[in-house]
Image (cartoon, rainbow, N blue to C red):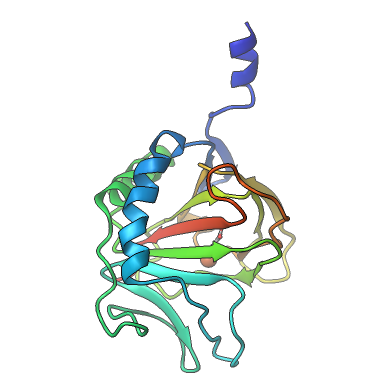
Length: 214
Ligand code: SIN
Ligand code: FE2
């Protein structure tokens, strides 16, 4: 009885827009495998603060894995096969992430998603990500699969223009959010992460976005 009551708050997929699905706790049973896979990636290509085209330093630190990595510098935003910090290709996309991304996309109605890029964002308490569209990828028919780990955050999910009203979606450790189709170019961002200590990841939030970039 108690168990079924708890299920009400648990892991049912939630459709938040026509082509946007929240999968609460989708990676909870695989968190350790994900962290094991991230460790060598981050040793080879550590988190760093990139410059925006406007010359500002991004508050959120980032790295990438996969054939392509998202980079920002004074010339603009783009995907690049080479990590500018190491001069080497980005670490390969770990099979566990490729697998989760495909299963999450399918659970949200997007079959045969084969990501070639994973942006790894690192938030400290207070860090935010301003409203933006993900539009550096070639094929907007492919969805974005976002995995959240560590401290919770409020994800802002807007419309196709910057001024449209935004909904606030709480994202917790282990949640996966998938958006694609007619929602693919919606503006989105993250409100400042509240101070806290996550039992597994400490004072940080890590978000992985898997994309088909090339
Ligand atoms: C992003 O838009 O690239 C990241 C979103 C998030 O951190 O939840
Ligand atoms: Fe984004």
